[in-house]
Image (cartoon, rainbow, N blue to C red; front, side):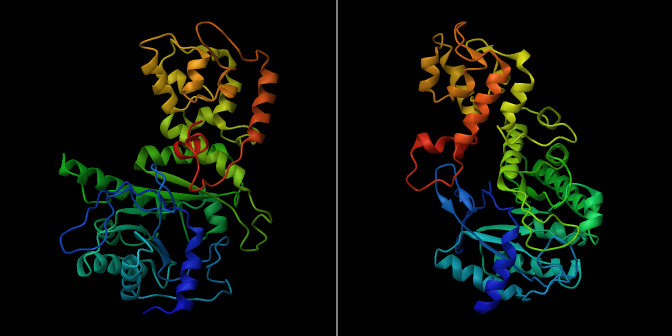
Length: 419
């Protein structure tokens, strides 16, 4: 059994990886087994129905052979070291699951020895959980760069989700801050898994493939290197398109390690928040990275990226609510995807008014500057005044974790990502 000191070291070392999310997996329990990942998934977040679900997030080892300057577990760091065996991880997962502490496992590791030997131990762990202990709960496995592709492929046959973290948005920054890693060491395994998942899904046909049912994710550190938001979003867009990623996670840089090549101050959560908003626009609202931010441009802090785009393209507004197509409605600040579909359904039966939009919970204090209802306009025509009003409104917004007793009115935006 793993002792308390090693458990503390390995779980503390794992907290810097934010690639945990609702799984999307449908791995159901089997007769005689324990665990189930088919009901809502596993994450450190809220599910759409408001439940908070959890997983054991742990490293197999924090004894790293690499020397990434931003990493607290780098080879030269003077920190307590610890490792766990596959049997110890399995025992821990089963004990925590039976006590209802967790619903699954997020397993990562520093490169302890060589990439292949590290990946072999992680693979042994997931095989024992699935085959020996008949564990059917959710497993997210962190891939090891440079590991043999056969090991990576085998791991993907047992895990629900895998992630290879890009970490830094350019090859130059990787060379400077993570000299043992290259762009290819991360992107090639992602490409391999994407191709093999497509082949497995095609072979399965109508049935759900058991090869990475919850897909792939990745993570980028924001602010440790000088790349702009526009550059970061272009890389995210390319990975979504080429590798069919489920999510790209953005981790605001925190100076847990001091070095002359690293910034001395935290990047701040607002930049991270704006990147997530922009990411949502790319995935669900039909925006391209080029539309959201230029190659060397950062997202504005004053208001969200959708408002920023609208302010740059005032020639497209106002739009008539009762005639505008879906793709146009989705680009109006204050109208989210749910609101746009409500408008499409409702206007089949009657001409909509501003009062109707208010009942649909459209954010009129934002949207009124960009829409008309039956030809009526209640916004501000001066672009400079609109810019000021949107900036003031953004300052009034409070971004906070939902409480258990949040009302639908206070929680709808946070739960659905409406912009």
